Length: 157
Image (cartoon, rainbow, N blue to C red; front, side):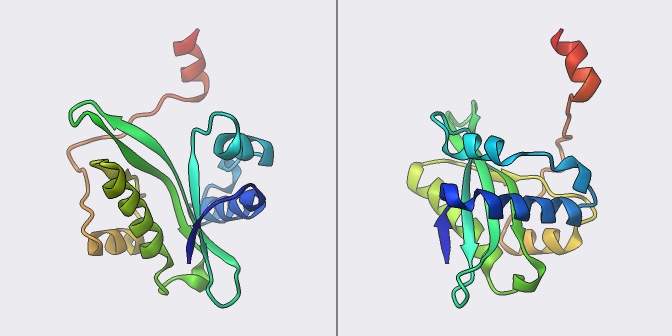
């Protein structure tokens, strides 16, 4: 079962985010606090959204999709950028990841959005294989750039 996250999900979402960071070898980079996540998802001006995958038998949250809207100036409409997709290892292979992505794709279709996109680490072959199986294709002509830390402070000064 997939459902829209509610404020009471903040602690489990943070647990899932921490698990994802551990899986990606960067546990020290997951720094969001409960207050920050709550504000982003449920504050007066939500900038992010989340869905939770719940085990049908136990009712336990076993996965999540955290996303936000992006905008295509070429298409003239919004799209969904999937920031994090994560399903706990014990729950993988039971359709939760597919159901989360299907939910987001359904929102795109329902709202007239033209894109659902995300990044995946180059070494994450299981995820790449899974995504390709859904019809996703890599955007190999594009390179991701980021400014953060000292460089961001210097640029913004």
